[in-house]
Image: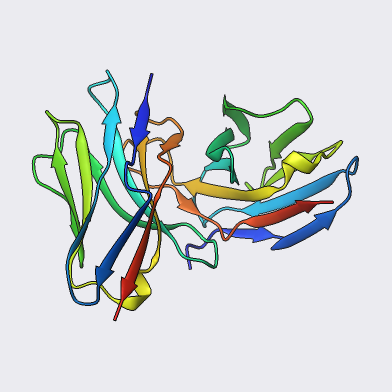
Amino acid sequence: AQKITQTQPGMFVQEKEAVTLDCTYDTSDPSYGLFWYKQPSSGEMIFLIYQGSYDQQNATEGRYSLNFQKARKSANLVISASQLGDSAMYFCAMRRNTDKLIFGTGTRLQVFP
Amino acid sequence: DSGVTQTPKHLITATGQRVTLRCSPRSGDLSVYWYQQSLDQGLQFLIQYYNGEERAKGNILERFSAQQFPDLHSELNLSSLELGDSALYFCASRRGAGATDTQYFGPGTRLTVL
């Protein structure tokens, strides 16, 4: 069965520092997609970054990058130069082909000055 | 702004009642997904529609139903509400069936059942 594991319930980082949020996944399908979403306290789910299982390079979107290690089944999110506005819940999710998203339990990131 | 709209933003109702949540997908998106986010269950997939047809079902209770209309907007109907149905309900839309198509989420409807 497909599963997403986020082992860090909470993380703290100082402003302007980089932080890595961990995500491991389990699937036997060769084709899948991995996503990260941000959920601020206001509640909306904001798409951050996508990595396909066949993508050769790690995905990057501005200050966000995805450290994709296929053999280890990990898809960690790296946020560089953290900002106060990055404080939020972060969810890792997986999709097989055109299927639904399966979410992890999330990591609460707090950025302090 | 994701381009996905959901109404109402907040809904407070009593046990046993019925409510309807509405979602308008991004322009051109054919797929609509409904998710429930609760403290004890996390984010769970409920149901998916593609161009008016039900495509997949997840952990959706029999008291819940949904549909997608010809103009592609979707409604999630929740009936015989229980306290445990209190949650944040998200709608997400996606352009088509491509493997790389991203799901974009609406702002959610926060349902409180008293």
